[in-house]
Image (cartoon, rainbow over all chains, first blue to last red; front, side, top):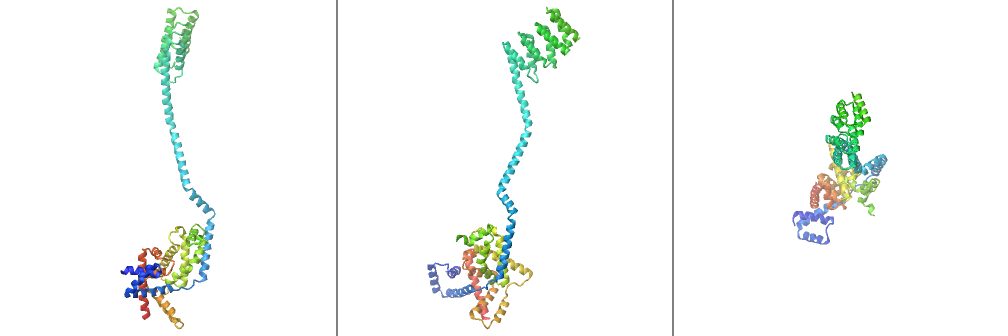
Length: 264
Length: 184
């Protein structure tokens, strides 16, 4: 048995931490080793003395002052019990929730701002989609104007009224309808539709040029009225030509003559 | 009865039932007082230190996790309290304990009605006072039957075997000093 083992075992033996078998072994070892037995005896006697070491009783004053201190502490914590504990508890319980709700609020605000600012893009989208519908409408007008059915051609002309910014192609198509359509009603509708865009030189020129091509008295009168309203001086020549070349209805003739005068 | 173990009481104190500290105090005050007294503090200092330990327990009650025995935790605090006190006292140059000379004077006063055991006891105190602080502490701790060597090891921060060896060597040193005093 080495020294350290002896040291630990003797402590175990003295403190009663050994089993009966271990105890027997240790005692046997001591019997066989008088040197260690001597050491152990000395140790045991000192151990005994230490264990017999007594201390006086603490004084009753110690108890008094301790319980005084304790009740002070209890009072202090009880005072804290009111609002502070409530608020503390609130924060303890709701800490994560508070953070989450603030986070959610932040996300909400952020999204709100984002949506607000994306209104601009919405406007752009609207413009884009408006442009798209205009394009579709333009194609629709062009197709409808080429239909054999007068009804559908009329529908095409009325579609043309709906444009905000009319295209040159549509104007040309309308003018062609005005000049060449077989149906008087369609031609009339074309004039009406073109009236919307009289601020365009192309439209005015087209209207003026179409004057000699008109055979129907209604159309002649409508054009004459329109030219008076527009005070279009360029229309005088075509009207004079119309008076010379065609056998016009007397009422129409008078109307045109009046118009020429009022334009001049 | 489970509710009344040291551990359960201390957990109650931790959760705000401070009155339960009174029970723990009653249960351990004598042992703690003996610890400080046998370490060489005079009775009134020992009483103060016992209170300091319990105030410290109150202050650090939240750090109690209930692992290991309450006694070991308490003695760890007691050790710190004793250490802090002596550090402060040596700074302020206050005589704290009972010096060996004082003990000797005490012996002479009562020389007439001494019985042998008591004489031994006084010699032992003198011998203890001459031991280094660390060893003295270790011997006093090992005196308490409730503290197993594994717990003492935890209190002083070493392995169980090392604790046994240290106590053994402290005992040996004490015996040497004691014998010298006996001869003198």
